[in-house]
Length: 330
Ligand code: UT7
Image 1 (cartoon, rainbow, N blue to C red):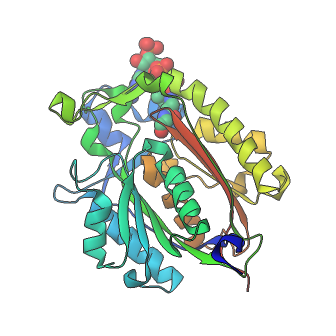
Image 2 (image 1 turned 180 degrees about the vertical axis):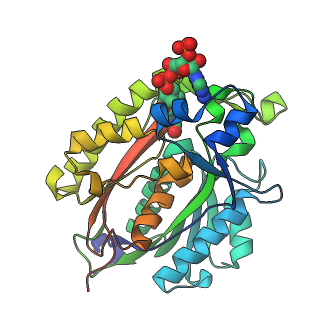
């Protein structure tokens, strides 16, 4: 059979890892820094605390910790990797990519490396790109990492945004397999609507001569989030060939517990099948989904063969969803 006639391989998730910085900032800590209180933050968002990077800690450092743990779970080493894709909005530097630094720190000398910038949807976008690269035969093993030092782009005088975000990293290992039909990434959908770029953005960048801080119209983002995530999930489920009741787990972007609850209801999922980390991690943007996923994997909640729905939305607006059967056939 020629390469062109070969069926697409399955793209399996065979390992996960995550990392949270040591420093924890609680709502009570924030109440000492600005005009806010624990009750408001918990009621409106479900957040109680967030992790914050150390002064010398970089996005690439967190990404490397998460990648090491994911490689270990998959039983692979960095030199086995063909590619590294880092989803981040808070790169170490404007360039080179954070992924290039991660490649150096991991010693993954065979791997191409690049960043994907789709803010809180970054992990879904990176997964989608990696899936396409593996299915097309460009690579067999890719580590996809979501890593963010979001605390570095917050205005600590703006209570409407500063209380919402945190730092961290999560990673998954993707591997090609020709022996695993019906396993791995079953569907993946990504969308962008740039007409809404101004409801969630950073007022900085090379053209402005400063890094800038997050600006958000929370209510507008909230309305788009519930509507767009629901339709994104619908499309991902449809494309996967499965039914809503085949989904074992919802591992959503962790921005606001009220958005998560809405999607839980829509999918008619019981409480124990929805992974919630927002109370302890807050919104870690591109890191939030793989962080939540890895936590549920390591607690042996998500099992080999379970079907997981991932979804995320953020600045752009950019959003997406994917349906994945986790692990590999025995
Ligand atoms: O990952 C990217 C996706 N992002 C999201 O999904 C965020 C989506 N949006 C949200 O989660 C919610 O809109 C927020 C949590 C950001 C805000 O909740 P809300 O229920 O929409 O509150 P609001 O913005 O309408 O503000 C209500 C009140 C205002 O006071 P007044 O005007 O009613 O007197 C705010 O000034 O709450 C006030 N407020 C605060 N009070 C105490 C805003 N931030 C705070 C705060 N502490 N931190």
